[in-house]
Amino acid sequence: MEARTGGIAATAPPAPGPLRDAAPGSGAPARAGAPPWYLVAVTVASTSVIVGLLWDISWHRTIGRDAFLTPAHVAIYLGALIAGTACGWLALATTFAGSAAERAAGVRFWGFRAPLGAWVCIWGSFAMLTSAPFDNWWHNAYGLDVEILSPPHAVLGLGMIGIQVGAMLMVLAHQNRHGAAGGLLRWMYIYCAGVALLMAATTVFEFTGFANQMHGSLFYRVAAIVYPAFLIAPARAGKLRGSATAIALVYMGLTLAMVWILPLFPATARLAPIYHPVTRMVPPTFPLLLVVPAVLFDLILRRGEGRPEWRLALVMGPLFVLALLAVQWPFAEFLLSPAARNPLFAADQWDYNYRPGAWQHEYWHLDRGAGGAWSAAKFWSGIAIATGTAIVTSWIGLVRGRWMKAVQR
Image (cartoon, rainbow, N blue to C red; front, side):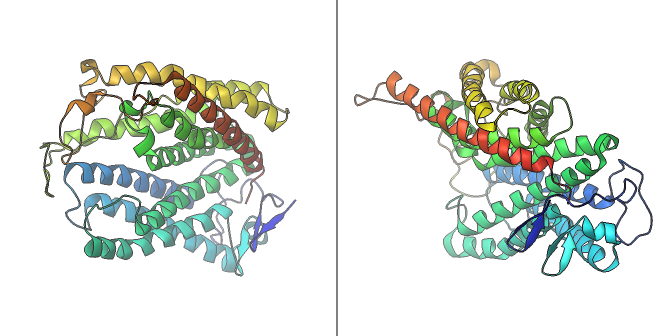
């Protein structure tokens, strides 16, 4: 079957033979399950982008934007260069030097052929590299760090997501073609899906990143928009028994690596005003405990195979919200306590330009009534909205996951 959208042919052609996944035109067949170099390249690129992004956020929170070519920016744009170069070469090699089977395993776009994920990576690389001079001009014209969601930052963010989703789709297509033979590809796919989940979490960090927000319904409403789809869709296409759990663990592992590594490096603020002097890189906040709803998703996906997506979504949406509420509510209390103010949990770490105060250990965005007091009615109505949202995004994830299971290009 073949579907065409916007000039791009997507989903599954006749799969090439199990030994045909060498570089197109190389004439050297690869052993089944051994990832081609361009899959390794886009996986490295995806990692470089997310590590650079978390590093850059820490840089802004610790030092300020003191220059354009910071090490964090170099890591981000290096990822764009690697992904764009590798996928551009792959498109040219497949189009002009690939075998008939290799061209059949590609998607045609403007007369060229390459895997669907490669085209997504190429677009993401182009968007990121285009945003770089635009971002530099924007800061020179309007000031440093005046707002997060500026036009160049929006283009840069979409490009980052493009590279990470593209890398996941490239590995997914190889996994689907190899079946039982692609053991390493299964783990590469899970890793790429975990990076994409981390990117999604970073995108909504302002709403879900702080323990102070976890007693308000806004936290759960935003979480319901993002996380179910980014867990369910790749998990449904995964070949591991606990794919959603593994994806959540990758997200947690990468975040914790940055939480524990960044504070090892000394740094001081260089951009006034400085209200809270720091001496080391400010780490990301402790990751969300998404592994708990992920375990439940795996159980439902395994036992609900073959059932209508809407029925599964009616179960998965409420379970996601209730599971997140059950773990994040008490964990927020712990993270705001003195017991979490240590290198392991990295609590109470704030930007240099935040004025210290009682707000650091209080809850924000609480659901309040007319008199300013916490309102149970408003909170639970917000949780009801979050539950309805999670049902919709769970259904979207299930439908998208069914499509992903068929991707072989």
